[in-house]
Length: 259
Image (cartoon, rainbow, N blue to C red; front, side, top):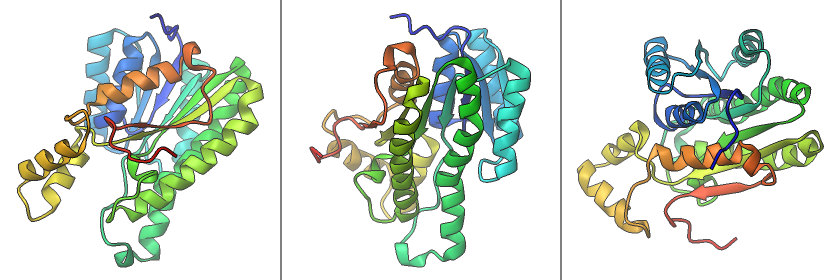
């Protein structure tokens, strides 16, 4: 299927590794020019070089901290200057710390809100005017399955990503007339550095935790970044333009609710 992403311009957050890198790589394979962002320059530059080498498309690395309003503004301004416009925005920026809900002070909660919720709000605020100029576009947020099926110890991300889902649903209603769709993906267990940290965080050996979690998943495997990236590519393409306001779990059947 031709997703018609050639010559489209995309911003992908948190793209130096993990899910963000996987999404950027697949969009580039489909012909989109991609601006990738992350906080650490060496990892980001290496990711950009790898995507360029393997896809042949233009890749623009932008070192930025998504928790800072001025960095969100600079990302979009740089993309407009370098590419002339914007068609696709992927909001993705890792996750806050894991811990018991009562252990987090106001500073921890404020930081989580800035990282997960306000990052999305600010990027959208800057990006939507450029999409309107192009006659349409697509916004895709990456959260986690815990946002719709809470997990003990993940309070910071559960609360803030649930806010992202509500924000995105409301946004989708308001900007649909401009040809912009808005969706949220809620990944389950995906093979990333963060998941490996979760495996190693407890008293049990990481391989024991991984085996037990794998058994909980109906398809009996941990997901890959391509499992996420392939769906993203569809949703942000013209083929997915009728899908908006959705929060979609990609979890191998892990979610038990029928909603």
